Amino acid sequence: MNLHSLLLGVVVLLPFGFSTLNAGEAPRYILDTDLASDCDDAAAVAMANALMDRGEVRILAMMISTGGSYSAPALSAINTWYGHGAIPIGTLKDPTFWSGGGSEKPSGAYNYESYTPILAERFPTTLKSGADAPDAIDLYRQTLAEQPDASVVINTIGPLINLARLMESGPDDHSSLNGLELIRAKVKQLVVTGGKNPAGSSSNFSKSGAGVHTRKVLDGWPTPIVFVGNEVGGPILTGWRRNPGATEGNPAREAYRLFHAGDALKERASWDQAGILYAIRGPGMLFELVEGGYQKVADDGSTTWTSGMVSGRHHAYVRKRVKDEVLKDMFEDLMTQGRK
View 1 (cartoon, rainbow, N blue to C red):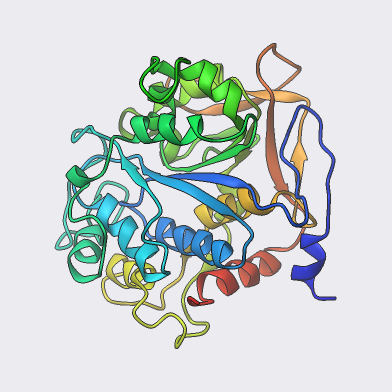
View 2 (view 1 turned 30 degrees about the vertical axis):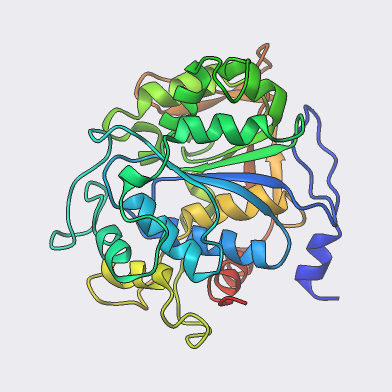
Protein backbone atom coordinates (compact mmCIF):
# COMPACT_ATOMS: atom_id res chain seq x y z
CA MET A 1 0.00 0.00 0.00
CA ASN A 2 1.49 3.39 -0.98
CA LEU A 3 1.48 6.49 1.22
CA HIS A 4 -1.43 8.10 -0.63
CA SER A 5 -3.66 5.06 -0.15
CA LEU A 6 -2.68 4.78 3.48
CA LEU A 7 -3.51 8.42 4.17
CA LEU A 8 -6.99 8.08 2.72
CA GLY A 9 -7.81 5.29 5.16
CA VAL A 10 -6.85 7.15 8.32
CA VAL A 11 -9.47 8.50 10.71
CA VAL A 12 -8.32 10.88 13.42
CA LEU A 13 -10.72 11.65 16.25
CA LEU A 14 -10.57 15.20 17.56
CA PRO A 15 -12.55 17.19 20.13
CA PHE A 16 -14.63 20.33 19.61
CA GLY A 17 -15.98 19.25 16.21
CA PHE A 18 -12.67 19.61 14.37
CA SER A 19 -12.98 18.00 10.95
CA THR A 20 -11.69 14.46 10.46
CA LEU A 21 -10.42 12.58 7.45
CA ASN A 22 -13.19 10.15 6.56
CA ALA A 23 -12.58 7.62 3.81
CA GLY A 24 -15.13 7.88 1.02
CA GLU A 25 -16.57 11.19 2.20
CA ALA A 26 -15.66 14.16 0.05
CA PRO A 27 -15.93 17.39 2.04
CA ARG A 28 -18.23 20.18 0.87
CA TYR A 29 -15.69 22.92 0.37
CA ILE A 30 -15.45 26.67 -0.28
CA LEU A 31 -12.06 28.21 -1.13
CA ASP A 32 -11.39 31.89 -0.39
CA THR A 33 -8.20 33.10 -2.12
CA ASP A 34 -6.22 36.28 -2.74
CA LEU A 35 -5.13 35.07 -6.17
CA ALA A 36 -3.16 38.20 -7.03
CA SER A 37 0.09 39.10 -5.30
CA ASP A 38 1.74 35.69 -5.07
CA CYS A 39 1.87 32.62 -7.28
CA ASP A 40 1.39 29.99 -4.54
CA ASP A 41 -2.34 30.75 -4.70
CA ALA A 42 -2.34 29.56 -8.33
CA ALA A 43 -0.66 26.29 -7.37
CA ALA A 44 -3.09 25.84 -4.48
CA VAL A 45 -6.05 26.31 -6.83
CA ALA A 46 -4.47 23.75 -9.17
CA MET A 47 -4.22 21.32 -6.25
CA ALA A 48 -7.87 21.84 -5.33
CA ASN A 49 -8.90 21.09 -8.92
CA ALA A 50 -6.71 17.99 -8.99
CA LEU A 51 -8.23 16.73 -5.75
CA MET A 52 -11.69 17.38 -7.21
CA ASP A 53 -10.74 15.22 -10.22
CA ARG A 54 -9.76 12.47 -7.77
CA GLY A 55 -13.16 12.66 -6.09
CA GLU A 56 -11.66 13.83 -2.80
CA VAL A 57 -13.51 17.14 -2.55
CA ARG A 58 -16.75 18.71 -3.63
CA ILE A 59 -15.97 22.33 -4.47
CA LEU A 60 -19.10 24.39 -3.91
CA ALA A 61 -17.67 27.81 -4.77
CA MET A 62 -14.51 29.90 -4.80
CA MET A 63 -14.14 33.47 -3.59
CA ILE A 64 -11.66 36.25 -4.32
CA SER A 65 -10.58 38.36 -1.33
CA THR A 66 -8.81 41.17 -3.20
CA GLY A 67 -10.11 44.16 -5.15
CA GLY A 68 -9.56 44.78 -8.84
CA SER A 69 -10.84 43.37 -12.10
CA TYR A 70 -8.46 40.52 -12.90
CA SER A 71 -8.35 37.99 -10.07
CA ALA A 72 -11.81 36.51 -10.63
CA PRO A 73 -11.28 35.82 -14.37
CA ALA A 74 -7.76 34.52 -13.65
CA LEU A 75 -9.24 32.11 -11.11
CA SER A 76 -11.85 31.08 -13.66
CA ALA A 77 -9.07 30.47 -16.20
CA ILE A 78 -7.40 27.91 -13.93
CA ASN A 79 -10.68 26.17 -13.12
CA THR A 80 -11.64 26.16 -16.81
CA TRP A 81 -8.33 24.55 -17.83
CA TYR A 82 -9.16 21.66 -15.49
CA GLY A 83 -12.67 21.38 -16.94
CA HIS A 84 -14.29 22.93 -13.87
CA GLY A 85 -15.34 26.27 -15.32
CA ALA A 86 -18.79 25.89 -13.80
CA ILE A 87 -17.48 26.37 -10.23
CA PRO A 88 -19.21 29.56 -9.02
CA ILE A 89 -16.83 32.44 -8.30
CA GLY A 90 -17.59 35.42 -6.07
CA THR A 91 -15.37 38.44 -5.58
CA LEU A 92 -14.74 41.25 -3.14
CA LYS A 93 -16.60 44.34 -4.31
CA ASP A 94 -14.09 46.81 -2.93
CA PRO A 95 -11.69 48.21 -5.55
CA THR A 96 -9.56 49.88 -2.84
CA PHE A 97 -8.56 46.71 -0.97
CA TRP A 98 -5.35 45.01 -2.10
CA SER A 99 -5.49 46.11 -5.73
CA GLY A 100 -3.26 47.68 -8.37
CA GLY A 101 0.11 46.95 -9.86
CA GLY A 102 0.73 45.47 -13.27
CA SER A 103 2.66 42.83 -15.19
CA GLU A 104 5.31 45.39 -16.13
CA LYS A 105 6.16 45.98 -12.46
CA PRO A 106 8.21 43.70 -10.17
CA SER A 107 6.27 40.89 -8.55
CA GLY A 108 5.88 41.04 -4.81
CA ALA A 109 3.60 41.54 -1.88
CA TYR A 110 2.19 44.86 -3.14
CA ASN A 111 1.78 44.06 -6.83
CA TYR A 112 -1.67 42.52 -7.21
CA GLU A 113 -1.52 42.21 -11.00
CA SER A 114 1.83 40.58 -11.72
CA TYR A 115 0.15 37.68 -13.54
CA THR A 116 -3.65 37.92 -13.22
CA PRO A 117 -4.30 40.30 -16.17
CA ILE A 118 -2.38 38.03 -18.54
CA LEU A 119 -4.16 34.88 -17.33
CA ALA A 120 -7.49 36.68 -17.77
CA GLU A 121 -6.62 37.82 -21.30
CA ARG A 122 -4.81 34.78 -22.74
CA PHE A 123 -6.75 31.80 -21.38
CA PRO A 124 -10.36 30.65 -21.81
CA THR A 125 -12.47 31.88 -18.90
CA THR A 126 -16.13 32.14 -18.02
CA LEU A 127 -15.55 35.66 -16.64
CA LYS A 128 -14.12 38.61 -18.53
CA SER A 129 -13.86 40.88 -15.49
CA GLY A 130 -14.41 40.88 -11.76
CA ALA A 131 -17.44 43.03 -12.53
CA ASP A 132 -19.06 39.93 -14.04
CA ALA A 133 -18.70 37.94 -10.79
CA PRO A 134 -21.24 38.17 -7.98
CA ASP A 135 -20.41 39.75 -4.65
CA ALA A 136 -18.59 37.17 -2.55
CA ILE A 137 -20.91 37.73 0.42
CA ASP A 138 -24.01 37.09 -1.67
CA LEU A 139 -22.48 33.91 -3.11
CA TYR A 140 -21.40 32.78 0.37
CA ARG A 141 -24.92 33.22 1.69
CA GLN A 142 -26.53 31.50 -1.29
CA THR A 143 -24.10 28.58 -1.18
CA LEU A 144 -24.29 28.03 2.57
CA ALA A 145 -28.09 28.25 2.62
CA GLU A 146 -28.29 25.39 0.11
CA GLN A 147 -26.13 22.98 2.13
CA PRO A 148 -27.00 20.53 4.91
CA ASP A 149 -26.36 21.71 8.44
CA ALA A 150 -22.79 21.52 9.78
CA SER A 151 -21.47 20.24 6.44
CA VAL A 152 -19.24 22.92 4.90
CA VAL A 153 -15.47 23.42 5.22
CA ILE A 154 -14.36 26.97 4.41
CA ASN A 155 -10.66 27.38 3.60
CA THR A 156 -9.05 30.82 3.41
CA ILE A 157 -5.67 31.33 1.77
CA GLY A 158 -5.81 35.12 1.84
CA PRO A 159 -7.06 37.97 4.04
CA LEU A 160 -10.22 37.43 6.07
CA ILE A 161 -12.19 40.40 4.75
CA ASN A 162 -14.88 38.30 3.06
CA LEU A 163 -15.46 36.27 6.23
CA ALA A 164 -15.66 39.40 8.38
CA ARG A 165 -18.29 40.83 6.02
CA LEU A 166 -20.16 37.53 5.97
CA MET A 167 -20.34 37.63 9.76
CA GLU A 168 -21.86 41.13 9.53
CA SER A 169 -24.41 40.23 6.84
CA GLY A 170 -28.13 40.29 7.47
CA PRO A 171 -31.05 38.15 6.33
CA ASP A 172 -31.77 38.16 2.59
CA ASP A 173 -33.56 36.20 -0.12
CA HIS A 174 -31.20 33.26 0.41
CA SER A 175 -31.76 32.85 4.14
CA SER A 176 -33.70 34.41 6.99
CA LEU A 177 -30.62 33.92 9.21
CA ASN A 178 -28.08 36.65 9.83
CA GLY A 179 -24.43 35.98 9.07
CA LEU A 180 -23.41 34.52 12.40
CA GLU A 181 -26.52 32.34 12.55
CA LEU A 182 -25.95 31.07 9.00
CA ILE A 183 -22.31 30.26 9.71
CA ARG A 184 -23.20 28.50 12.95
CA ALA A 185 -25.86 26.43 11.16
CA LYS A 186 -23.96 25.41 8.02
CA VAL A 187 -20.19 25.55 8.58
CA LYS A 188 -18.47 22.51 10.04
CA GLN A 189 -15.00 24.03 10.22
CA LEU A 190 -12.95 27.01 9.08
CA VAL A 191 -9.36 26.34 7.99
CA VAL A 192 -7.34 29.57 7.98
CA THR A 193 -4.02 29.71 6.14
CA GLY A 194 -1.89 32.48 7.61
CA GLY A 195 -0.19 33.78 10.70
CA LYS A 196 2.71 32.04 12.38
CA ASN A 197 2.59 29.70 15.34
CA PRO A 198 3.03 29.81 18.25
CA ALA A 199 3.41 33.58 17.71
CA GLY A 200 3.82 35.92 14.78
CA SER A 201 1.96 37.13 11.73
CA SER A 202 1.83 37.08 7.95
CA SER A 203 0.59 39.23 5.11
CA ASN A 204 -2.79 37.48 5.16
CA PHE A 205 -3.33 38.70 8.72
CA SER A 206 -1.64 42.09 8.87
CA LYS A 207 -0.84 43.68 5.50
CA SER A 208 -2.56 46.89 4.35
CA GLY A 209 -5.62 47.00 6.57
CA ALA A 210 -6.11 43.25 6.96
CA GLY A 211 -5.64 43.35 10.74
CA VAL A 212 -9.12 44.63 11.57
CA HIS A 213 -10.72 41.77 9.63
CA THR A 214 -8.36 39.22 11.18
CA ARG A 215 -9.32 40.34 14.66
CA LYS A 216 -13.04 40.28 13.93
CA VAL A 217 -12.94 36.73 12.59
CA LEU A 218 -10.56 35.24 15.13
CA ASP A 219 -12.41 36.81 18.05
CA GLY A 220 -15.95 36.07 16.88
CA TRP A 221 -16.19 33.19 14.42
CA PRO A 222 -18.78 30.76 15.83
CA THR A 223 -17.42 27.38 14.63
CA PRO A 224 -14.08 25.56 15.10
CA ILE A 225 -11.03 27.16 13.43
CA VAL A 226 -7.84 25.35 12.45
CA PHE A 227 -4.83 27.54 11.63
CA VAL A 228 -2.23 26.46 9.07
CA GLY A 229 0.54 28.94 9.83
CA ASN A 230 3.33 30.08 7.54
CA GLU A 231 5.74 27.82 9.41
CA VAL A 232 4.02 24.78 7.85
CA GLY A 233 4.37 25.44 4.12
CA GLY A 234 6.88 28.29 4.13
CA PRO A 235 10.08 26.16 4.29
CA ILE A 236 8.82 23.87 1.48
CA LEU A 237 9.82 25.13 -1.97
CA THR A 238 7.80 23.73 -4.85
CA GLY A 239 7.61 24.30 -8.58
CA TRP A 240 6.63 22.80 -11.93
CA ARG A 241 9.58 20.60 -12.91
CA ARG A 242 7.56 17.39 -12.63
CA ASN A 243 5.30 16.11 -15.40
CA PRO A 244 5.94 18.98 -17.83
CA GLY A 245 3.78 17.37 -20.47
CA ALA A 246 0.81 17.13 -18.16
CA THR A 247 0.99 20.82 -17.24
CA GLU A 248 1.74 22.32 -20.64
CA GLY A 249 -0.61 25.26 -21.13
CA ASN A 250 -1.75 25.25 -17.50
CA PRO A 251 -2.44 28.87 -16.44
CA ALA A 252 -1.36 28.01 -12.89
CA ARG A 253 2.10 27.14 -14.22
CA GLU A 254 2.06 30.31 -16.31
CA ALA A 255 1.42 32.28 -13.11
CA TYR A 256 4.78 31.05 -11.80
CA ARG A 257 6.56 32.01 -15.03
CA LEU A 258 5.09 35.53 -14.92
CA PHE A 259 5.69 35.94 -11.19
CA HIS A 260 9.33 34.95 -11.64
CA ALA A 261 9.90 37.21 -14.66
CA GLY A 262 9.94 34.40 -17.20
CA ASP A 263 11.37 31.52 -15.16
CA ALA A 264 8.60 28.94 -15.01
CA LEU A 265 10.79 26.46 -13.15
CA LYS A 266 11.77 28.70 -10.27
CA GLU A 267 10.37 27.43 -6.98
CA ARG A 268 8.28 29.28 -4.42
CA ALA A 269 7.25 28.69 -0.81
CA SER A 270 4.17 26.48 -0.39
CA TRP A 271 2.16 28.38 2.21
CA ASP A 272 -1.18 27.92 0.48
CA GLN A 273 -0.61 24.36 -0.73
CA ALA A 274 -0.27 23.34 2.92
CA GLY A 275 -3.59 24.97 3.76
CA ILE A 276 -5.35 23.29 0.84
CA LEU A 277 -4.04 19.83 1.68
CA TYR A 278 -5.02 20.05 5.35
CA ALA A 279 -8.46 21.52 4.63
CA ILE A 280 -9.38 18.78 2.15
CA ARG A 281 -7.61 15.71 3.54
CA GLY A 282 -7.45 16.52 7.24
CA PRO A 283 -4.60 15.60 9.59
CA GLY A 284 -4.00 11.97 8.58
CA MET A 285 -0.39 10.90 9.01
CA LEU A 286 1.01 14.24 7.84
CA PHE A 287 -0.19 16.66 10.48
CA GLU A 288 -1.22 16.91 14.10
CA LEU A 289 -3.19 19.58 15.92
CA VAL A 290 -2.03 21.67 18.85
CA GLU A 291 -5.04 22.34 21.05
CA GLY A 292 -5.82 23.52 24.57
CA GLY A 293 -5.62 27.21 23.77
CA TYR A 294 -6.70 29.97 21.40
CA GLN A 295 -5.25 32.59 19.10
CA LYS A 296 -5.01 35.93 20.88
CA VAL A 297 -4.97 38.57 18.17
CA ALA A 298 -3.61 42.12 18.31
CA ASP A 299 -4.95 45.12 16.44
CA ASP A 300 -2.34 44.68 13.69
CA GLY A 301 -3.37 41.06 13.08
CA SER A 302 -0.41 39.41 14.79
CA THR A 303 -1.32 36.42 16.93
CA THR A 304 -0.07 34.60 19.99
CA TRP A 305 -1.14 31.08 20.88
CA THR A 306 -2.46 31.43 24.42
CA SER A 307 -3.01 28.52 26.79
CA GLY A 308 -6.43 28.00 28.28
CA MET A 309 -9.95 27.90 26.96
CA VAL A 310 -12.17 30.88 26.15
CA SER A 311 -15.90 30.45 25.75
CA GLY A 312 -16.95 30.48 22.10
CA ARG A 313 -13.45 29.93 20.67
CA HIS A 314 -12.59 26.46 19.45
CA HIS A 315 -9.11 26.95 18.02
CA ALA A 316 -6.26 24.63 17.06
CA TYR A 317 -3.17 24.96 14.90
CA VAL A 318 -1.41 22.52 12.60
CA ARG A 319 2.02 21.05 13.21
CA LYS A 320 3.87 18.80 10.76
CA ARG A 321 4.44 15.13 11.58
CA VAL A 322 6.62 14.35 8.56
CA LYS A 323 9.72 15.78 6.95
CA ASP A 324 9.33 18.61 4.47
CA GLU A 325 10.49 16.37 1.63
CA VAL A 326 7.39 14.20 2.04
CA LEU A 327 5.10 17.21 1.77
CA LYS A 328 7.07 18.63 -1.17
CA ASP A 329 6.54 15.39 -3.09
CA MET A 330 2.83 15.39 -2.31
CA PHE A 331 2.32 19.04 -3.21
CA GLU A 332 4.14 18.72 -6.53
CA ASP A 333 2.42 15.47 -7.46
CA LEU A 334 -0.94 17.20 -7.10
CA MET A 335 0.12 20.50 -8.69
CA THR A 336 1.44 18.75 -11.79
CA GLN A 337 -0.92 15.82 -12.23
CA GLY A 338 -2.60 17.53 -15.19
CA ARG A 339 -6.26 17.22 -16.02
CA LYS A 340 -8.63 14.47 -17.01
